[in-house]
Amino acid sequence: MKIVTVKIPATTANLGPGFDTLGMALSFYDSYEAEVVSSGLEISVSGEGVGDILLDESNLIYKSLALVFNKLGKKVPGLKIRCDNNIPHGRGMGSSGAAVAGGIMLAAGLLQDEIEISEQQLLGFATELEGHPDNVAPALFGGLTIAWVEEDGVPRHKKLTVHRGVSPLVLVPPHQMSTKLARSLQPESVPHTDAVFNVSRSALLVAALTQSPELMLAATEDRLHQSYRSSAMPETSALIKKLRAHGHPAVVSGAGPSVLVLEDDPAKRMEAIALVESSFPDWRVLALAVDVKGASLLVQSGSGT
Image 1: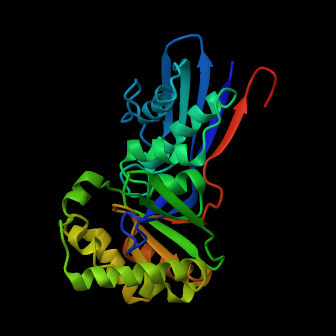
Image 2: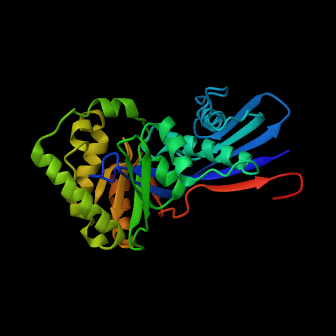
Image 3: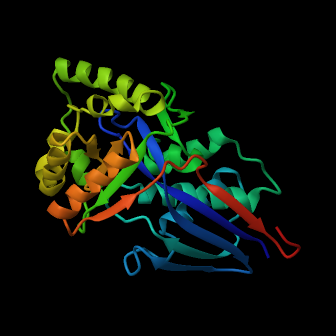
């Protein structure tokens, strides 16, 4: 019987001004395994989400896997799915994107002897389920990604290499935040000056992340979404304000409430950690690297790997 394992990275989206466009993979991982059995579905979970994650066909990993099979005209086999979850849920670190991308990669591994699935197909399947490609693109492909949707609805991405001087730091609060709630606080339109401001900062952020990390503080300024959501995340907003006042390029990670700090050297990251530990001691500190690989797949059978 075939066993497929996928290791999938956490992601952080928006990165300040790059709303619904920029995403980055982080060196923090979930691991999912699918084993083909004669019939039925059995799902087990360890780590994050135990007791909360659905263990039937409405499970997001299974739904993602089944979507690929159905789109390709294949019947889903009996499965045992095991999930070892490290990515915090409801914290803006791409847990749902990881589940979607992970389920799709499990399907790709199970079907690899019959069908070769392209990167574009993987992104299309993931975007259909997630609704937007900014988290699933880096989860699948790693690194810094620019994601967009063509006029015909086809999602695309461009992967970029992050400058080796960039030192990410993620600060995770003990409470969750609903992505749906965060999005509901976003206005339908913004002032022209704010739109122009974010266009300039988004362009600058790509340069800062790939070539000139010393520009990161200015490059992470935002007027498009963070201020509108601040009332729902007062601690997050207070921490970002405190960090930026001390020269640390802090932004909301995804829809929040975690905070992402994109330092341009490890010494500054240590200064930021000390500031957080003294002022917000109940927040979890994750000093991470940029994951450059994205999802990794291992396929095993009775005759080996």
